[in-house]
Every structure is written in C-alpha cells, then in structure tokens.
Image (cartoon, rainbow, N blue to C red; front, side, top):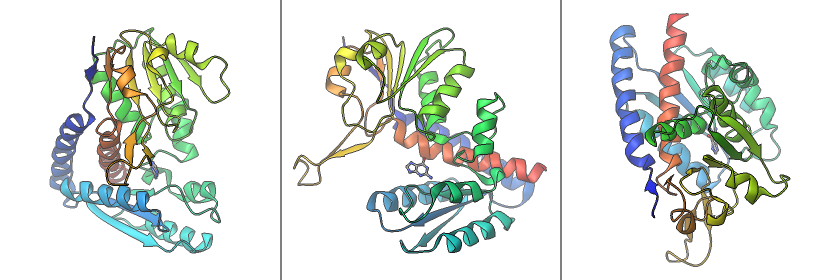
Length: 291
Ligand code: GUN
C-alpha cells in the first residue's frame, strides 16, 4: 500500500490565503502594513535563496518586507547595532536573523538581542521558555508547519506515540513541546539514542529533523504511521546536470510503501515554514498594536 502524500505546497497556499486576509484586516484597523525585516550576513548561497523567498512571500501577502544584506566580515557590534535599530523602529513588527551566522559571530548573543516581541522565529529564550511553560507566544515556524500538516493528516494526537528524531532549538525541541501540548506521548531521539530503529518503529507519528540524508529507512517505520520529514539535504551525486538533488531525512521511496501518510521533499514542510513566518509577523504586529 502506498502512503498518502501530504502536500505542504498546497497547504502553504491555504495558509498564505489566511495571512492575506489577516494582513488586509490589520491594514484596515491600523492604516499600516505589518513589517518583516530579514537580516542576512555573508554569502551562503542557500541562505540567499531562503531570504529572498521570505521577502518575496511577505510582499505577496501585503507585508512590508525588507532584506538587510551585510558582509561576512561585519563585526558582532555592528550587527547588534542594526538589531537595536530594528528593535526601536515602529514600522518593524518582525525581525529574522538568518542562520547560520559566520563563525566569528556569536549566534546566541545576536539572537538574544532581538526583542522577544519581534522574534518571529521564536528563537529568543523568552519565547522558548514561554512555549515550554505551556504559554506559547511566538512559536518557531517549522514546528508550527509540522503541526498544521498533522492536522491535514487528521491524526488523533491524544495519547499517540510521537517520536521526534533531532533535538535542535529550531525544530526538535519546540515541535516536541507542541506535540506534548496536544497530548501526545513524546520521545525525543537523537544521535546518541540506543537502537534508534526500534524507537522509531514505536511511533504513530514520526518527525525526522536530523539533517542526515535518507537516514530513516522504510524498515524503521510502523505500518500506517504518519511521517513528517523536516530534512532538506542536497546530495551531490552528479544528477540534475551536476546540481545534485534535494532529499529529506527519510528514505522516501521505502517509507511510502509502509507509512500511512508522508511529506515529500521538496514540497513538504519547507513551504509551510515560510507561510508560518508570515503568520507570526501578523501575530507580532497585532500584539504590538494592541499593547
Ligand atoms: N536557517 C535555516 N532555517 C532557519 C529558520 O527557520 N530561521 C532562521 N532565522 N534561519 C534559518
């Protein structure tokens, strides 16, 4: 039997439609557009593509978007100064600092400098702490996208065994918090987990967020499980005119034969991350205008 494909691309179109309506309402109420400022440091090609896509998606939804491109050798102090300016600006509702930052810059120091009220990535310790305390405010975008995909898959999370492979602050930990809040029984597995295949085989819901191409094999999946593949890995195998191909953390061709539902890569979680960034920007704008 072949799994249902959960199209993040189609679902993201729906979410963006919701955002367009929310932006229009915000504009009617306040007379201004919500604003999202994206900070990109250095010349990582993938980060350039991601940030351009974020700005483009923001503008398409009626959000004022601005991209601040800074050289790789910018000092930490100069970057902190820009963030301070964006924190103080009234037309800036959301600030996103694209990761990874150059090695010479301490990412924690930079992310901690973003005002929690404008932290549309949900990475600030205040927002991470609120989520962990069961009082979510600005929640990381990829985990929100994962939850929306589980809703599309009509999974009953109450009492379900959810296994998250990966413990990053960006995906693994926050998605585990959201699953727990939805009453799933949550296991966070990682590179040191003993007998990872067996742990995964117990999962009714499996979230793969490790960044290792095709690590989760079909034999690791419980028949009928819902599989959300967060990985986006470029494999340079000479295919696609030398550009290589994008694969997830799950061996898709094997998994589709076992799972009940699965997200593809590309076109799964990725488009939802951007859609939820836009949602978070509207949420931040509403809170700021209400307080
Ligand atoms: N780099 C890869 N994913 C992300 C993300 O979700 N937010 C930011 N700021 N940088 C990233």
